[in-house]
Image (tube, rainbow, N blue to C red; front, side):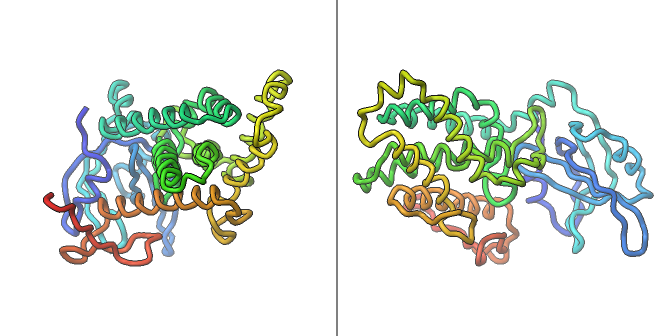
Length: 341
């Protein structure tokens, strides 16, 4: 199935109407009312990389249809679309249910996205296989074998970066690669610890930002809201560590240096400190070189993804300057291409 993505549609819109179709999942519906007391629906549709929302007024022929359409339905939307001063406006809307084959393609995403996420998953496995410390290597392998499906469908965030199904794997692979490169530049860093910290730093987002098995929506969870991903990541590591430490392994590893308890404690510190500062949610600031390296790798990948998103979606203010997108501090400027490109 070849279809226009939500990103491609929204990127092409202006003040004039554009006729086009997208395939998406119906993820959210909210009953609202204007100040004058006129009821309307605000509906949201999503594909694997983006989402859009628009208003459906009570006198629209699609109002009753969208009111009764079950959330999670996968449909083709054909309409006249345009941007206005009040947001996205949709007219002449029609809906067609997708058949099972089309639904499978929609949930899998574009071939480019599938390939990128598969490569990220394989890269994570390769980097885990390079960890020499048997305790960290065993812990990481146990995590991947137990949580593959959940890990591979989670997002790295709800909005700012890698906010899509499978985004957590993309972000984690990039942070691990950056961490490995920093260890190449600074050989005094504990490479095994940095790689394990990179793998686990956002693992709690499997509960904070996860996607339903057959969905393109990331529902809010009580545990995610009450605990947050840093706390959940620490809890996950402790649970895996305690399960891994059988009497036989404790005996096998008792003479390793550094001691197992110190390895666990330093790994937990990397997770706790990876946001870098208290005001950004870390319960502690980085207090070891490895913790600082992980924070730098995490921050770098997140910020570069924000630039990528801005270049793909932000309106142009001039030939080289685009409109600022949250959380950027200024208007992004198109980058200088490589020599000879």
